[in-house]
Image (cartoon, rainbow, N blue to C red; front, side, top):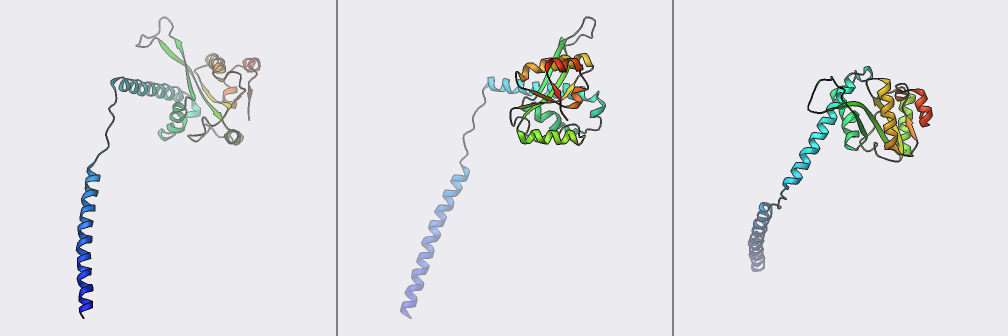
Length: 209
């Protein structure tokens, strides 16, 4: 009997000791929870750069959407499609906007330039290249790429060229050749139909699909 009593007393003592220890741990955990990481202050220069970047993205999106609205091939697109049509290539520097000076007599504005045309392009891997060709073969347009597909490799694709007329479209294509450099350019059949065939031959650019 006495042995069992000692065991019970020892257990109670151990229980009180554990309770105290747990209490200390709880307080320590609360203290750790209250501690907050130091927040890094953004410098005025960085805030200004972020504001300029945001404004540039907004302007680019606006210019591209307005240009797309004038084309029948984009009439069926919804607002949710803007992410893969405009935002993703723009964030990966795969959307080139060509500007031209306004002619005398044009409506005066804050900017003395107007959008001449827009090139939507990608530099892709072999796997993504096959995906693009498969979509063209199936007659799908616009080409749908994943976020990471746009800059996945070295193969250059000109997926669309948006311009108000053939002359400007051809000029934008010539400018795009400067972006691609010496790399071969594969162009979507949509692009081939919007520019002068003679220019394609001179530039040694071939429509795929």
